[in-house]
Amino acid sequence: QVQLVESGGGLVQAGGSLRLSCVASGRTNDIYHMGWFRRSPGKEREFVSAIGWSAGSTYYADSVKGRFTISRDKAANTMYLQMSSLKPEDTDVYYCAAAEATIATPEYWGQGTQVTVSS
Image (tube, rainbow, N blue to C red; front, side, top):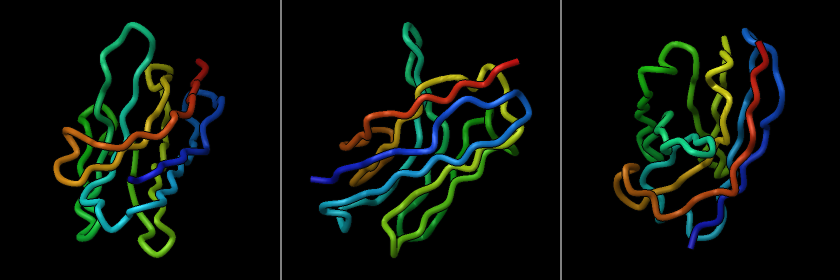
């Protein structure tokens, strides 16, 4: 089992920045990809970004490309999402996820952290 704990959400004005963190514990050697998803009530879950845990390859949704940067610190078992030029439509609950294979079907989820962008 892998446990994930997110932090760093909050309220920010449009154009501002936030950094989310996700700390993994447990069987972290099983992790192949980690990523971020977001969802609001009544909406479908949306992929935001992912990173290959070993090689560090990165992937982004078109909606955040050029504004968000994903990174990881393997020694600290921590993944980050630096969010810049935030827009009101980025308002959502952001979830950290970890996968033993493809990030499309993660086995492990964090509890979520709220990001609110005011206009």
